[in-house]
Length: 580
Image 1: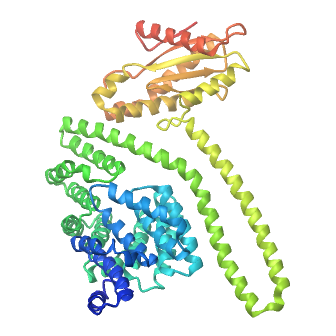
Image 2: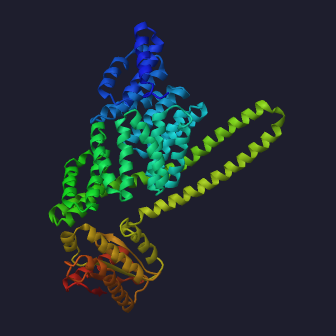
Image 3: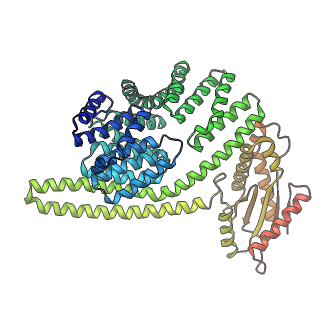
């Protein structure tokens, strides 16, 4: 049933059943009417309606209807500034799960998936969506299948797996097309269009985007319109149709504000600023940019804030408003760090849940296949032998798949172990990684331990910003890779300090490595200095080095000695190697 297009009939059924005292029918229409009010975006009226019914003991005895009412209530609570009521209801729903029938569990999983999506809990969203899809498939609940398929597709999109995201978005759209749930079908079209756009399949994306937009307009759903029109404006922008994009995005700013969709309101304002920049209207762009900056806290994610602040930095630099530019870049780094921490946590979880996705896909496949077998048995009893052979083949396939998944899991764990030992900026070993290399190498051969430190690095950061400082760090790492042999190792020891583990204790060889590294580093810094003419000094580094012997192979003592020699090199005027 399309709630929005059947609104008049639903309202009449609710009213008549209440007036006539048809209790069971009235409870059912009261629950459907609550969902209608949510989809009509009549939130104040919905709040009053829920207060009138969610404590009704008679309704609570009809558990499936009661859970549907709580599902709508949870969606309303998630719109509030205070997160605690929604969190409390989510916990209540989780406690109810063990006592639920399969049908009731599907309703509960839908509510939980909605909550976890809104609160950006990646693993939890995926967990309940997979459980929900499994149950919905067994119950042949097609609308719920579409809902969970869309959630899984959105999760793949967040993980950056665009092919999988497109695959599941198509499945969700195709599933909804079998139902009369036009609202969710249109949302599925919008999700599919979004991921197609990100995959640069623009023509197909526009087809689905216009389908979604047509429905949202037909029922005047502000939230849906805000999302669809933003995507349309973004397409026009990428096609360099700036005047068309301008009109669409201006309309969308007001629309998103009226719908209370702050992420979309700010995204539309940022797109408006981008259009002004393309048109050469920098002061107009700056005015819009300042408006976004003043309400930046309305953005739900650090990732969005960091992306905006990067654009703000570039705009302020082009307007030569240096203080504001540096303020923007400092804040961008803070929000980027926050996002990286959250992403790192999610990536750890992703290593665990990717295989859960695969396993659930196989469970759903087996379930579908089992239904086929049951039907075959009912119609053709004499083919038992064939079924037995088929089952055996499936078992063999599943064993093969299990072995493959185990192999993939081992590979993923190895990958995560490697990530934990790698500096994310320079892609070289971090402190832990290079210390492991040094410990391993000193046990096998006599080596040289060297510590390098970039000269006047703080001056670069203070005067030109951490983004330029990061380029210098990357340049040094690239120079080291180019200079060292396979027998030599290096890693970022901390800040601008680097630890070298050289496979030689010949001082002349170490001096040659230092000279080659200095030359390569200077070459890599040429472009940095060319783009920043105010850096009017040579970007150099100092190094202290000490060699191990059979009687002196304590790694910690060698590092302390190399560090002392490094400071001696600094005191002697920098840009030099001191080796002992």
